[in-house]
Image 1 (cartoon, rainbow, N blue to C red):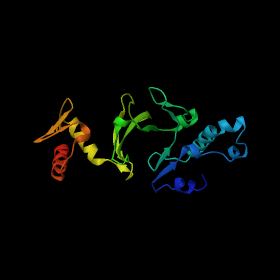
Image 2 (cartoon, helix red, strand yellow; image 1 turned 60 degrees about the vertical axis):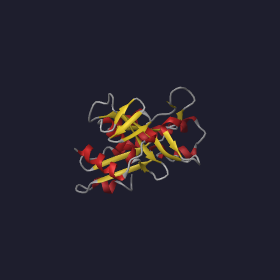
Image 3 (cartoon, one colour; image 1 turned 90 degrees about the horizontal axis):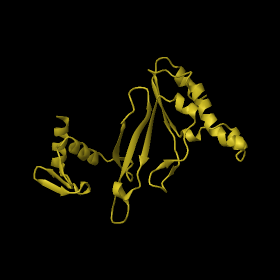
Image 4 (cartoon, rainbow, N blue to C red; image 1 turned 135 degrees about the vertical axis):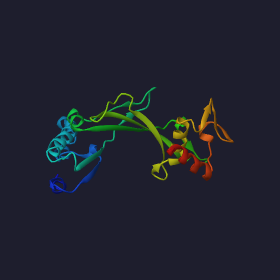
Length: 202
């Protein structure tokens, strides 16, 4: 708080803050009594206390706060179950909450012959927002984990399929004279990439 209040108090400058991660914001008391029952709930209370103090300084036109919160997920059953969630106080103080889930399913990632992951599906869900209704606000994109960025070519293919520029019939995908069996087998030339970008932009 001492490090950022100076930025928040400025009535002219605009700032975006990234906190990675919210899970690590905790009072010093937590480390003094790591095995006590009180310390177990102190983590959630610390986050809520921090946000309650922070909200007094925030300005909706000058400040954006982005919080990353890591959660444990149980994948032993049929569905992914979140094992721990942020405290209610923290949830209340958030304007928007987006949940990202990086799938480890074989059908939702691509690997090279040496088993290295080359593309992986990330699903996003808007769990809370004050800007618009959240019903049905979900989607996905693919990431290149080795490069640490979004798979823009895969995004291009998905958008082209949704717009029926690349046509789908069953497991087959066609674009002009090109035809592929299965989504993962689609290979685009540089010329086709340029054509698709122009078609999507209209």
